[in-house]
Length: 276
Image (cartoon, rainbow, N blue to C red; front, side, top):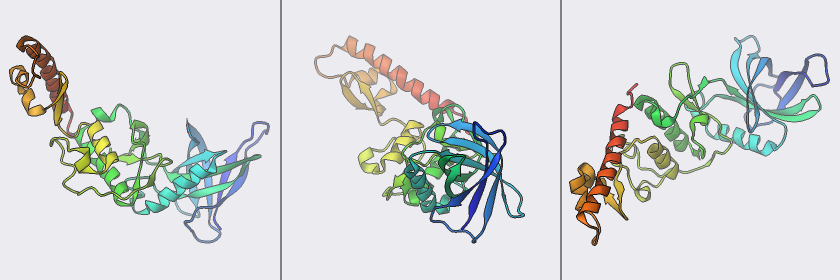
């Protein structure tokens, strides 16, 4: 059985002690393999405490890793480990490489520790303002996850890190679930096309993430009390022809000017996004 050697200093102790955690996930390694964590540095606290560290495996060069440690609710960490197993083909590309789930005691606390590849720095800014190239690669990562039987369920800026080559990597899989994606790819993600209907698109997560990043042009605009095809929003005068009965032309034109102005701003924003 493989083990993880982790250095830890309890609050009342004067020195760092080495603790051995045993591997408990379904993936197997060579019997007796010991993974040694060196110089763990605390970097984040959320659903778990996250440390960046070096990990030695035999005489191989140390690996740059992330250790996610929980002191309660081990089921969530075990579920995340099962997700990594299910997404084994995605590891090292769309998601981090997983080196295993270990459980045991640090000090007098029972802990669960998921060891993952360190992939890069947290994404900064908003996905809405990311370059088209970055969005393309992020959607490729998400499609890869869906193609391998899962959906993430929480794609936000905090669940994306940037690899040294500038490409994204999706992390934080603790909310992921099994999923059979029925999208008719590759025709479903055509950047700059009119946004497809969610009823036609079928996969809610991919549709919502693509729409959130403005990958598609608007199909409709909201005008007075109606949903109007965006083709009528080229000019205020054209849009005013779609006003409901009983609305005066003057009021229809005033509202149309505002709607067309907002529509043009949205188009200008999309056009202003950098390619790289």
